[in-house]
Length: 351
Image (tube, rainbow, N blue to C red; front, side, top):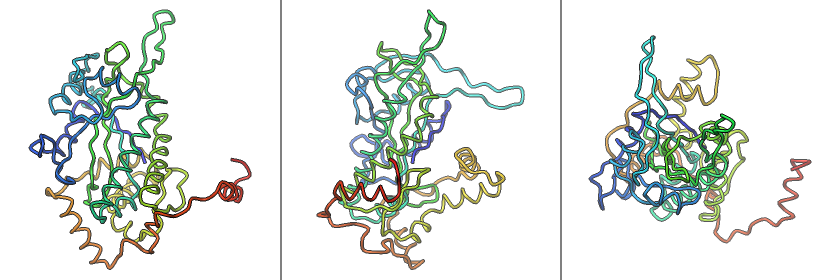
């Protein structure tokens, strides 16, 4: 699924704290790193060649801490391109802090069954899960660029602020392995600075209305692309797709394992039930996340985390795979067109 959060002037600091710039090859080493080669990298959507020239970094290139903070706080891209300065944070008459929107956190999270199977997989299979996830994120970002990659520009004739299509979107990618409760939780924070390059080389604010309008659809695109990628790479089969979230779980993954490694979700659900009068939704969940925010534990490698997860499963007598069909044979035959049409006809009169 995809969630979007507005970030203020200090919003980038959390993501930077999850990295250690003393890692090998000049990269970053997250405290839950895979292979000690994590680094926040640029991910570009749209006209990548044009965007790379405008912002100064190509897709896949590591972005330095200095470059990130200049972009985030001073509205200056690595290329030196500038945008309108951010307003300084203020405090209103009631003592409430007011801060501008410096960027957005677009968080793409894999279904729990994917995270659980990936967390217990061998290195080769783990890599297939990772690549399928990152490829799916890129597909969703291309969708967002196409449908929400806009800024608003003053029209001197009408006096209105007209939508103007951007050449593309430039994001900073932080990949994380765990939830705040320490469970396997594959997700990517795609940080979208609120100063994006226009075709004329200047940086401009995003049209956030378009971004939020397309968030649900982009989340569906991510989930669909992830299922397709993992089916092709590993032959996994999928259960029923949730119509609200677009999420489906891998067939054969033990529901007890999913529940065991969903401690953070359980914590949030309990907080929502007890504190927001039975209301549900993104706003209630976001409030619960703020209220129950905890600091992650000691630095751990993925191997150390895997050992802990295996011990937890053994303690509760739970196997990850409930049945032998979580990973299907690679030579499985896809359904024919007639079989697909017949399947659809059984549940829908029109489609």
